[in-house]
Length: 316
Image 1 (spheres, rainbow, N blue to C red):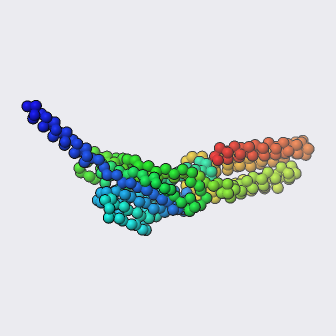
Image 2: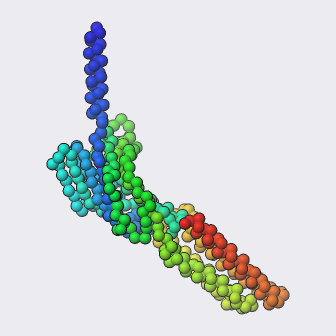
Image 3: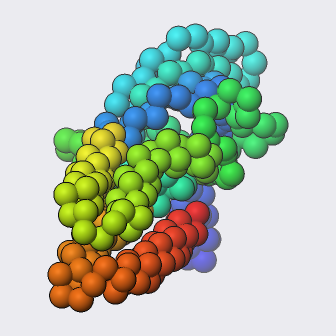
């Protein structure tokens, strides 16, 4: 009886050991080298990336030439590939051009920092058959030709299991849940912002200072002072519409909205100051109106400069 029990235990142990061996997924060692990131389109929320991708694995059935999946890509093409199956491992090297879709954080634009994400999967083999492992040997991008106007401050590669709450129509699965191994790349970009900032906001600041000139015009020159102020008001609004047309819609209040809102408010205060100065001219005399203009001009200028410096510092 003891012999039968021992044999039964050995059989169970062997079958469980074999099933455990069978369930161990094959490892695909994956590396990447990015040659360029270009055509970053904020309006369409996409960018282009050129890269070399290589994969080393044992199971020839993986066939990454046909089964490679880039989940976030709008489209991608393989322009060049090398396949070596002469050894005990498959070595595949391919050149990819991808048009990627991504989301942008615009709260601090143009002092924004963006994170670009891309990942690679095998469309036919799930995580029970295949897992990715990062090949970290060497550099992963060419800093000379990556992207114009940006600097890469972080670059991370990792492999994770991605869950899909669907069976993709597979009748062998009991519940709508699938898991696929994913090779992921995260690229942190910091914009070289000062040139772009002055290019976008010079018109707005010029409009404000044109309105500010009203304080140096005689207090009873109503037509000149109101004409400059109202014209500057429309110039600030026009400048904002030009910038907004190049950016995607966002529900959050961005730096662009803040600076234009502050400028509109202070141009409006200049108009209010002009009206009050005119009232003082009629009620008292020109000397009182001039003193009011001088004090109003100092308060508005100092407040405007401080608020602009504060919001820009917060963003940058």
